[in-house]
Image 1 (cartoon, rainbow, N blue to C red):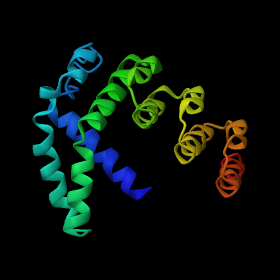
Image 2 (tube, rainbow, N blue to C red; image 1 turned 30 degrees about the vertical axis):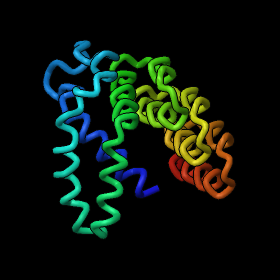
Image 3 (cartoon, rainbow, N blue to C red; image 1 turned 120 degrees about the vertical axis):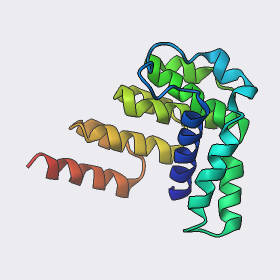
Length: 169
């Protein structure tokens, strides 16, 4: 889970630094497109960004672990999924994620989208149980106990319900 979070952060940083999305005033202006997300040359700056992020990784982990995570985070298909996720966020459109070929990349895209959309129905599209449970948990924090009931892991379901009970006090 911690490794997945680190990889997600690396990819998000890499996509931002590569220019896939503009962090300036033009965000949401439609500068991002599927054509950009599909262009392998568009990610040329990503390796440099990942190299920089990997230097921070070395402070906490072995070189072998950091290098492996860096290689995974520069996987072109994963970068494309991250870009599609940002595009789906920008347009608030989950159908963009459905255009990705592999389900694991669709899952990543949906996870990227869920934080901005707040639509718990997107959780239902995620096939990885751990990721889907996480999606339900996060969305349940808005006060929707029904989402806690959808969590497959009994310990996480209980923790979700306890958190909601505590928040409603």
